[in-house]
Image 1 (cartoon, helix red, strand yellow):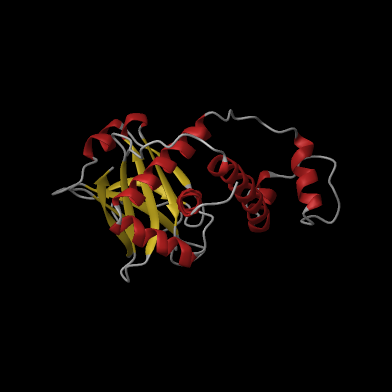
Image 2: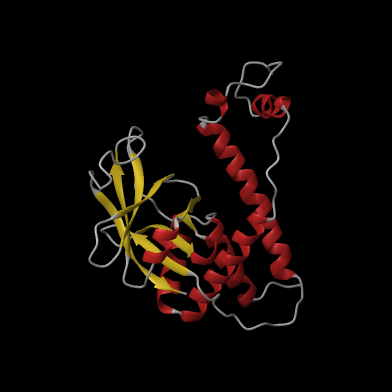
Length: 241
């Protein structure tokens, strides 16, 4: 089946949500989302679809020898150890995460291509009720991250777009700023891979179209005072989907 322009657009929107587009392609989708309501609805629909898919995957603890084989096959060890390596050796390995990320992206992209190119009856694109979104942009207007909030399930998914470089000994912390209130910490998150943040009932109650999200640079582990102590590097308004 030939790929149509509509299918290509749908695939781009799905890849945008997965975070596998390069910086230029992400910027193009960001501009499209800001100017085209249908594109914005398509992105939100993919965010809802892919997030719900993650919920169906149960957590399974791998056998101890699995990590040893992965490290050995990727050339990250001199020889395959007989027992599982210490968590500090593989969990903090940047090379390992790069390979795992590449593999996951290829699998996800293949699944999306199959879904998009499979004939199906056309259905109207409708934004899911209750979801909220935000583009957390830097001072130069470049989007650093996108955030999707699901108040019903009390969670937020933060996906990197073109995040700024942050020193290795610093943490990025996400803040909710309700109108007329002080910033409220949502937690420390990774700058370069998708993060899921759980939201307390008090936080969910403060989500609104008048609130902002902001990212500050903090000491390792987050602000020691409960308020931003470092520079704010990105911010963006929350919008209802």
